[in-house]
Length: 140
Image 1 (tube, one colour):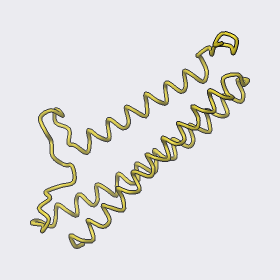
Image 2 (spheres, one colour; image 1 turned 90 degrees about the horizontal axis):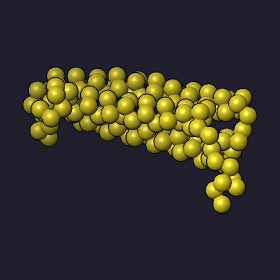
Image 3 (tube, rainbow, N blue to C red; image 1 turned 135 degrees about the horizontal axis):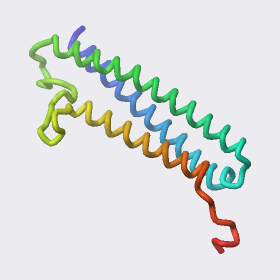
Image 4 (cartoon, one colour; image 1 turned 180 degrees about the vertical axis):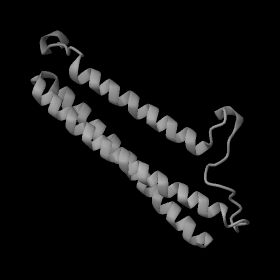
């Protein structure tokens, strides 16, 4: 592969990753709105079904992200085989700054994304099944 082909593929994959993150946050935002407007007063079965659908959607996005990750790593390997490049980029986030305690920029961003989505998922689980929403009279 040439340098231009690798950069083109890398740009396309980066756009796909941003789209997956955007759709995931859109799904989460829509679920939060639905939780506040409808699901907080819904019976358990409806809340469970809604949370299952959210879980399936986020799982699909996670699997898709895993596939994109494999492709991104492939472009990193192809790039490292080129040797000297005209753009002077050594790698696409393979640097390991001391502040990240041995993780590369790429690994640290993936870990941060996983931690953020896990925290959001657990919070939505809590608000869906355990949080007791105030009655409309209590908020007035």
